[in-house]
Amino acid sequence: MAKNKQASGGPRKGLKGQAGFEAILGEEGEDVLRALRATSPDLARLLVEYPFGEIYSRPGLDVRSRELVAIAALAALGNARPQLKMHVHGALNVGCTRTEIMEVLLMMTVFAGFPAALNGMDAARETFAERVLTAGKERTI
Image (cartoon, rainbow, N blue to C red; front, side, top):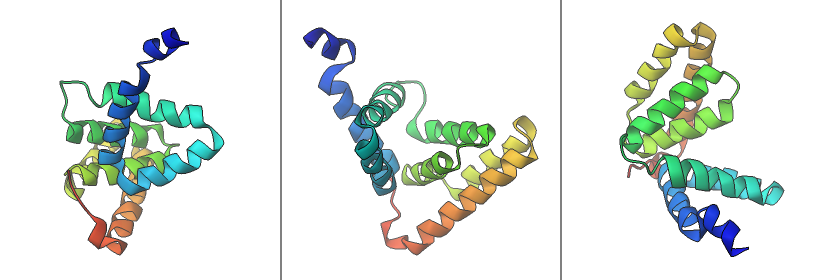
């Protein structure tokens, strides 16, 4: 059993991932994670440990760039609206501007097509409106 814990990174990776997850995705992310834990604790753990404990913590790209890449990828997929909105929140939380986010989504017209860009812009617009409704909560790390 100890061997499996070591191979999976053990508690350290989980703590590092949790800290990154909270710092980037904030309360919105915690709400999603809480609901996911009720259904699939293993998937919730993997969602925190791998992307945030392994990938986001790597050197080479700062967290702002990683969030803009996440937005581009999710918009290009075209079928991940909830995750796209979550990462728009994350991008704003780490200091990306609305203009930067919209420019990334505009780039999707070239690489993923107009439908992906239009759907991405709509998700961003909704997220921006949600942030206005909770203006006192808007923050950066």
